[in-house]
Length: 388
Ligand code: PMP
Image 1 (cartoon, rainbow, N blue to C red):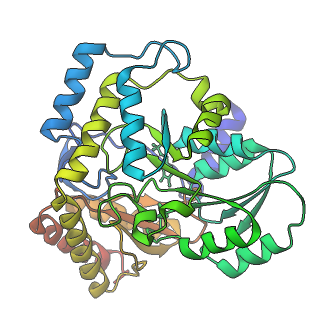
Image 2: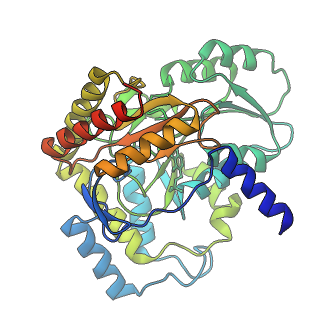
């Protein structure tokens, strides 16, 4: 314990100590956090459907009919018609031949990357990719070449010098989780074609949000066909739990046989699966949610920029306010909290050192009044810590 105590003291000294915050209710614009009411500006439930009547009803009905747990891994006894219906629906949604559901987006990245790349192969990975991609790369035992964020020239220079005969895999977030910007997918796809590489896009934050029909980053860029593996999560805009990979039938068959995070873990609970299925229908039937989400994001982004915050320019519901070092970022988060806005500080190892920030997200369920109230608190808090 002595070493653990010393390490904890070190984490505290750097201003990087983390604690859990506790909500007593669902992901709604106004939540009770640690016993106090506040505006939730930190949820990935972008479409605001974790409390949608039909989504909740579907989860309850599936639980009543199938019970609370799936009882086994998918390849043994934990596979139900609901799981298969969801995989068909996800493939249709993404416009691919097939899809495979994993228990989380994290496990999907681990399972897919470690199945596709092995010793002798090379993975090209954006420096700001999500931790689960980084961990998938580590598990794969392939050589990993990290390219500068969104830098196609750097990516090309790394691929061009790679003359080994192994498989080449380019992997990127579609929407970067902590910056909210988009990967330059058209350029990535072009390089992949030129150098014979596979492309995998983790669209955790684009699915249900981007593109005319909410299909994600690939639809936004009009690139569905050229992306070999579209990865996603059911836990953000779709308001449920789980992750998935979508692509060609044979790729999915291969993953079913090789991806250890799929094979060796109990299938998701029927209620969770049914909620995701119902959520996919909501994406189609209620396009106003995407519109509202965009309006809310624009209103907040413009307001914060006008106030003088350093806002990373994006077109997604992720709005990152760059601060720099941890101490001021934590002070700003605390001032926001005291003002009734829940938007926590993001620090290393989630983001690179000296790029500490407040990551603000909006939901379709926020009203313009919620956004304006949040802006007032941001103004007051920013002044209090001397940032604006
Ligand atoms: N990929 C990205 C880009 C993410 O932001 C996240 C969640 N933070 C994940 C994967 C993991 O998804 P899940 O939460 O479903 O495990």
